[in-house]
Image 1 (cartoon, rainbow, N blue to C red):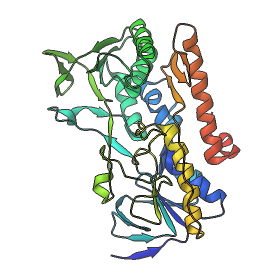
Image 2: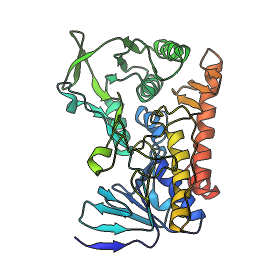
Image 3: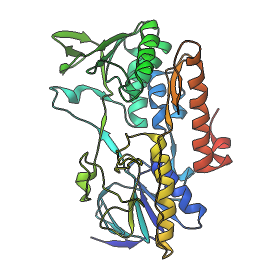
Image 4: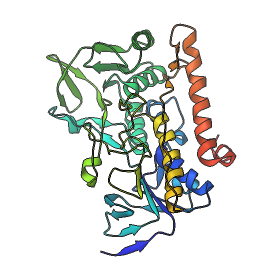
Length: 364
């Protein structure tokens, strides 16, 4: 096994947390080496719209070289304090490490789950888009943010395609306020989506889902959640399987290795773990990058305070759902506001992670 010294800070993962960590490191005058198996930054919050056909394919991803000059196309298989082991056998040593390689689709013990199309990466979205374009029926499993946005996009773009949305809970968007879930159902039902709540999936077949004894034909999409991959990396984990970090985002028991984003167990002021979300990943990634620079400079890392500012979902067709602080934008007429908020968040992400160059380089 060969060991290579990286003259800077290694960031593992090129998602939202990763590119914001890299941006903080580069702004501080340090080199940021981004390790990622695809070499692409996926715009996860846009993938449902890309797959459903209401957003252009360029919204799926950008090359990581847009965010850092130092990109290593590889996967991490293990991490020690300041040392990253790659799948090609190399070991990278660095002044500090920020682990952000996030989550993978969960795989509950449902017979045939491997037959369902996932929606987690840009490649998933582009492949699914081609299949949706020719499908006469689509069955989406999962009534969370991804499933609701995908159902809304397909129903808006493909008016003659039958869309079914299956959710085991008794409401959509269980992580959001009850009225937001009800308004999501209103928008989807108004577009002809077959919304099935409190329905358990018995099995998945090739081109069908069996729900409560009934077989529903169609292209099957799995959008029912994700699981962290922390346990495979040899890191200490929380009860939910995410990397256990301290108040500075250092992996517990380490001095030079931080974790941020979906893979880390970020907690609020009350000690409750945040749900996986891009907005928490952005905050944590930037903070972890700042603290990695402090450690690399021989300084003490600062405590980090994160907060969840709400949810913004784009359902296509100039309709959406949003919770911003105490405000809810989901009722009729107010549901035209979230798509504009979503666009603003996308612009802010590009500005924060790449500066004005990020906006100028985006294809139109």
